[in-house]
Length: 477
Image (tube, rainbow, N blue to C red; front, side):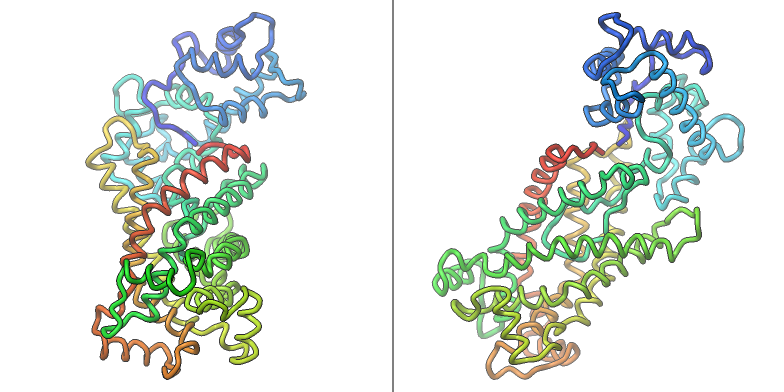
């Protein structure tokens, strides 16, 4: 992924005419440290570092793999020259796509206009920050030479890849299933990077959910059993669970919660791609609205597919010690005593919760990102890991706050059959009952442990995600 770093420009010797072999020869000689006529990966990395343009191991390996046509582990001059010429052609197309008035220069207004077509809204001030990071002569415009030298060794191949670090990534799992699916470039799809990123995200989600499972089970217990007469709090709730089933009971239902990650992610990713194609004409870029609608519909599709596992997870979490021997035993008992329809109890409020969650999550994320760019960005538009994690955690929390009453009603509908003497109410009936008996506050029972798990979930998920990406050889964004 592009790093918008000031100073990412080639030395003066490299800034000659694009067709001049002297330019390529000068660069090749600077990279060929031992003067043997070829450049290996170590020389490429060391040479780029000495030129003041270290790209990171993943990007450097991608350049090398693309340029090494005969796969002998070395770049000769012909291979090096062919890579640069091919890459310059791609950068020329990207430059022309930004240069809307065809005057040979890119201005701030053109950047704003171009990024809007990609579903990314920025202000003129933010566009000027992008220009400043590329502009070598201080004119606040970028000509072809400045653009070429800035991107010459960056492996991004089009303008969409160049701005991808701003996408709302879902590699960070906080234990909820309502997020917009991830997106991948054509290059990532062809190279197989997409499934590695999904696998890394899945493993990170499994570790994160397992680490925060006690808080998740406490949330479910408070949603189902909490009332004015039973004022279950954090400490009392944990004590009650440990007393009833021991320490291991704190993770009851977590196995199902982890197992459903894989099918849910697969269905959501597949459905997202299909809905994007349906909502956009061929060759048209996917905008923010299309992305939101596609993501919401993909989430609904995935939820429809895995929803029985959501019901089983809730039943296991609320169940008492010995009531169920495991996921399959729970499913068997539900089917036997309640019928197939029981696996979709609470389905309607669950679907209704996707729209406010996803909509507010994306809107707040964009608002926070824009606020950071306007008030804290100086000579870069790259927010960095901590800013993106903070934006993601806060936006997700706001999304949960908006959709929580629906989540609570869904959980109660899933567990109603287990509570003796409780009438089997529908969604509207449950809302009325909760508000009449517990007030509006009753719709937010269990939200404290739910919020408590956000920060540790984000932190754990991020650390595992990054380590898994390195293990699986996923290129850095």
